[in-house]
Length: 392
Image (tube, rainbow, N blue to C red; front, top):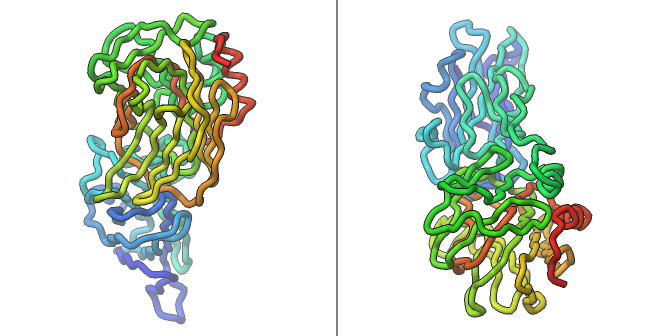
């Protein structure tokens, strides 16, 4: 098998004869950051998984553009070949496996060689596929399903069908298709269930379950965090590079001097460089969303003084297209812009109720995370469906 990386088509035959080859263009839809590596394997059908990497690169790329071009030619008269591309973050691509796919994107495709004709394949490495490891006969699709390597058709519909909720509020949330939805209504145990079936979490430390929940129109309960490090850890959360909306109901008992963290997901790549986001409730502020871009930080600069009252408060933080918005009890509380650029992927666990800025003391309920900007109309629908009387 001939494998070459180039910025343009590389001929493998003389100029007077049309080559029998397939050009594979690698497209990076995982925003580049230092520490990423891409390796390409190509072999006869069924042999690519164990083949030596013919090409490996750690060169930077621009989001959505080509990483490089790989040209394949038939070996020994073979009419087909399997292509396997592995992107790895802060690790060797060869270590990515079904048992440990964290920080890995694996793309597979079968290509066919037609005598005397050039072929072309656009191999897209997608952020939603971070941590998804399909078997050797399938490849991850944009919807995170595993589809056959000789087809572009998606795999089975993922679990978490809208409308499966047990009350009006959960149905309203599910109708808006969150990527993850945690109700925190388990009566006991360590499992924090993702209603979408994508990334269950684990209760760690003395999280008290079964406390009064936020919803007046539901019997669903919430979880109480002790402010000393109790938390929910979600290790397999999807990365969301395009947009993110975080929705939750909170009842804070944290002292005014604390900066309690509602949700945090941060990678530390090197000294002084962080990647990810944090939603917290700083002193005198209603809420604060911080976006970490290496050594750069984007945050809402100023909010009204906090006036949550004694009950639950509904908070939504939205980041999309260079704009951050925060809604408190359905009303816009903050709006700011920032220099928009493709954010790097985040592979660390999502942590609820605890973080580097401070621990949360109080109750958190109905956490939903979306991969698109939730709008004011949807937020109002959710609040109305809750039946909850909220603070003015």
